[in-house]
Figure (cartoon, rainbow, N blue to C red):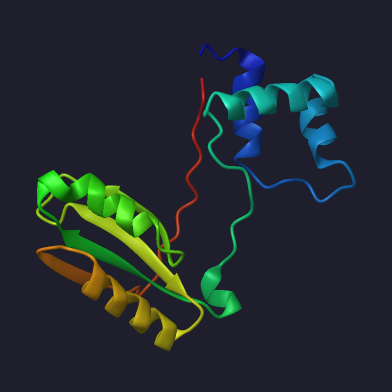
Length: 151
């Protein structure tokens, strides 16, 4: 799908914070010089084409009491996709991705407290086939604000 300049401007605007006003999308539409209706039509098309994969808010899970950890797993390459699918089926796994590394499957586990997090990891250890697993909890957070400069 070919993106025109307006699509690109919309994508740039949607990566930032929404204005806290009665009609935030109208404000974004105005900033890219289109109507609010055209804005919604374009956003729906961008979602349908999977250019916008997800649209929502980000919550700092730690500030609302949740605990999480990053897990690095060594999986036989032939079972990588099957294992990733299995992990994706757990409510407590937020996402996973393959890496070109000895530990070739990485994922994040999040739970309501430390006890539930331990139980989730123990369940993975019992139910998922893997060669080795590293639990890599956050010691110090370095958060970057990733935004794509779409040209």
